[in-house]
Image (cartoon, rainbow, N blue to C red; front, side, top):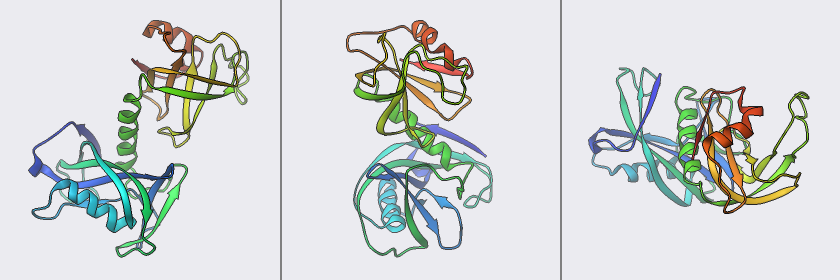
Length: 251
């Protein structure tokens, strides 16, 4: 199964809409009446229907969303036979994100229930497709945050050792941003550079994203305002941990 992403394609190629959704910081997943797996809401485009209207309709039908904000993220395609494509030819869909603030009390669709999750599920209906869609959404979301101000809660201060891998020493402060979910379903981790003493919390600016090509996790690089580092300088300071991964630094 091959999943690709595009900024845009001809409208007539778009046959599906998939809507990654959250509500109050939790992931929104659907469980079909005939399956024991979980899936992101989405479905087929009807004849004559605007593709964004497809996304809104499917979101309402499958999650019972009453109040929500929805926006397109990108176009995706899937090549290979699956539950909704018996030819294996490349098919295209619109990937959207929705923040849901109110649900109806009863579903009127093929879905048995809607589940709000802190972490991504292990038993996916489309395990070769939908995790990649969520990963892509998070990559796009993360890239847009460079330059913004965040507060990092430090759980591994400068001078400490990893709680499980005792040989790993932290030459920088390292922690997480509360309420921001990362691709692995946990709160977003961050390296703090430019601070030369242990701290419990730190508020600073995101200057880079560390994309791990061989792992679902990503790391943010946070520094004091008006401080900056080159890719080479960042690489040197995070080498203690990133040496174990094939990672790319995006400024």
